[in-house]
Image 1: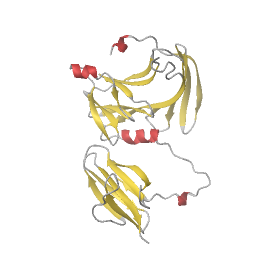
Image 2: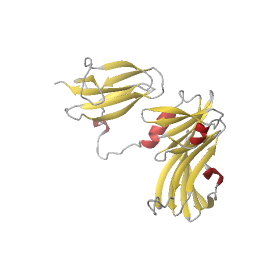
Image 3: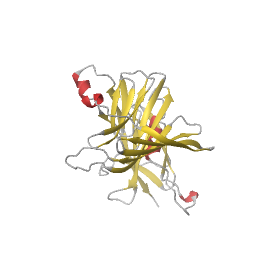
Image 4: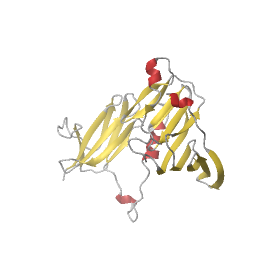
Length: 285
């Protein structure tokens, strides 16, 4: 925890330029330097969006140093919401006990969020998972430079993105999870493929439920989907099969033991908080 009292320097901008303001977005490019390292950072604000995007390229040439970014936000809360696979956990933003002091840095996958009953701010990332959440500060660990066991650890060029996303209402009422998914799962372009041919086997209709897995079955000739309740509350979801010859068969996570009866057309389900359900999509000819 003593590293907080050992700040060496902050990055300084030595040049910047506007990358243009169009109907879709506006961007500024900053060229920064810190120590022996150089940073090119493009900051973008999309039209009709509240998300501030930081696309960063770093030539890291340091030894025994850390690179972090920090955002003081106008939100007072005792706990922050941290993303984990298929859910989230609450972590304290205070250091009232020795246990809290020992958790001066915590892990989160795609987002951390500080919210009260009216508003909140989330810090989204695409590959950086170490965070410091203290009082009203959202802090993200970007790079470090240890020399043991690898004397060249992290040296060289790195590219990553993070997003500062303010929102109205509580975390559960916001679209933080959807914004984090968009940052981590960019659209794929298929050249020469008609859009009418790209039809998924199932459509998921439920604001709190996500389609986390769509894959071929391990041992059978069918699709497997896995849906997850993501907001921590009892939620309704409708599954629409796009083929009239398809049916949904509930199964377990290992795809070994099927349960219940298969269903066709549309299936309506209620999921418990953070519940995971797996289905096989089979064809009948």
